[in-house]
Structure formats: structure tokens, C-alpha cells
Image (cartoon, rainbow, N blue to C red; front, side, top):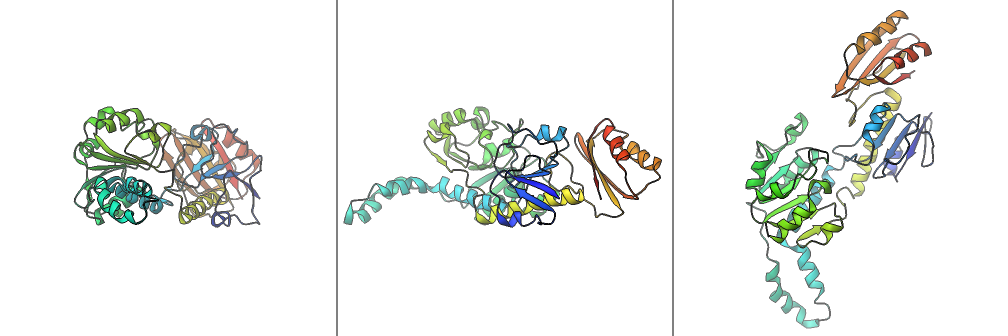
Length: 388
């Protein structure tokens, strides 16, 4: 039996993946094998000794202490693409809101309450102050061509926009889904200098924090409209405020407002609604649960942010999985221990991801506790699991 701790309300479609015969799922377990969560912050949480994996029902993992999990051999999963369509739809809505001053018009229309029969005439007289450009024929720059960025780029192209995208880490899968009509920029500066609209779809890390700042803003076209549906920290708020005052930025649309942003003019602040659809929550919950189940039961890793993807069908009597540092001689040390016990390795797979690596070994015969202990004592080994 595996114990799974839920730190947020998880859609039933996800929880159904945990069979009652193999799993106990509660929100009170003190020493779980796995954790499934959404936005709950784990940074002040002591990681349970038995914890083997954390599954985030969503793409962002800023709420999870990745480094601490890696050191303890805890695999962290996310669900890239599961909420992509939901976010894409809101980004397209954001493009329209940024252009047409729809929110300003709606708020102004409310001021006409009580004017009675005069309302229609007042509407016709006052609507001119909310004129805004059409999207068709305008140039959109998409920074980050992951699952969401690709969908935004393709949809914007279908709306008649000229779309240019930039992503130095474009995956093969994303490239396959990207329309041939999308122009690939050689760097972000090309987008900053030429685009009427810029939308951000990159993770928040040391290299992307404050990527929109006074220096990059100066290189943009006057009247640029910026959309941020990724993370608030990508944009320097004080630099943005200056750019809005100087009319360098015509509108800023964000799904991650803070108090500073809320005080600015020409800002449309949305309360983090990107993935707030029933379909998105269900998709994310199902994917996160399936990742957790496959790892706990079979040792397979899919969509981990701190360890390499490594998945293979099981064969033999026992499966041994080893999370370890990506250093030389590891495989030879593992193999030597099984050879000493006259155990045959039927199948072996090893993958690496920067400083970490993962090895799956299917064994013919019985693996005793002695081998497990010796594997765990090898320098650089983070966690050993024996799946029978």
C-alpha cells in the first residue's frame, strides 16, 4: 500500500487514478510515499522521510523546494500542456482586452446607470474615447514556445496577426505543432524592436527574472502592449510603471497582479485565472496522478523537473531503480554488485539530466536487502528502490 497526501483540493478525476487496493489518499498523512498538490507552498514544510515523489497538478513548480527534493532523491513532477488550452484562451482574450479598451468601456457604461432613456444617446456620444486597434495585421512576439506559447502563436496567426516567436530551447514536439507561418526570431531583441504586442511564456528563474526592465523596454516600439500570463517576476514593476507613464507601454495585461501593479494606469489585472477551468483542473489532476502512480508502482519517470524522463516496460522478477548524481563509474559499480550475487540484469536503462541521473534495472532472481544497502552506500547515490 502507498500513502498519498493531498495538499490542495484535487479534482475527483485525478483521485480516481489511485486504486483503493493500492493507495490510501488523505489530507492528513504524516509520512506519505507521494504528495499531489496544486498551489500549496511546500517551502516551509519539512519533507517526510518516506516521501518518494511530489506531483504538481500544473506546470509551475515555484511552490516546491526543488533543490531540497533533489538532494533527498524525491522526484518532482509537473503537468506541462495539461492546462495549455485554458491559458491560451485567456491570452487571446488578453490580446483583445489590451487592444480594444473593453474593460474601460464596461466600467464607463456602468456610470450611466440612472440616466434612463438618455443611455443610448450617451453611449453613442461617449464610445469614441474607447477606440482601439484591431489585431489583424499587427505583429505579435511570443517569447517561449512551449505548449502554451505554440498554441497562442498558432491561434494569433489564425486571427490574422503576423507572429514571430523566440525560444532557444524549442523542443522537437513543440516544433512539430508550430505553424510553418510563424517566423523564428534569432533573439529576443528582434521581438522587442519590431512587435506591437509581446506575450511572455517562460518560467521564472534567475535568467528570466526581470527580463522586462528599463533596458529592454527602451528597445521596444512606442505604444507596445505587453501580456504576462507566466509569472509576475518576469516584469520589473517599477520600470514598467515609468514606461506606462511615458506612454512607451500602452497597456499591460497580467494574470499575476501585485499591489504595485494594481495601482498603475493602463493595466488589466486578472486574478490568476489562466488555468481556472473545470477542464484544466481535471486534465492536470489526471496527469499528475498518473505520473505519481507510474513512478510509485513501476519506477517510470515522465515530466519530472529535477530528474530525467526514463520509462521502460517491466520484465523479470524485480525492478531496481536508482536516483543518483550524473558522475562516471556509476553503472559499472551497480553492475558489479549484481554480478557478485550471480544475478542477471535482463534490462537496463540510464538517463541523465544535467547533474542528476536515473537508472532502471530489471533483475532475474531475488534481490536481498544486502544489495539494496550496498547500492545506497555508493557515493553519489541519492535513493534506491526495489520494486517486487
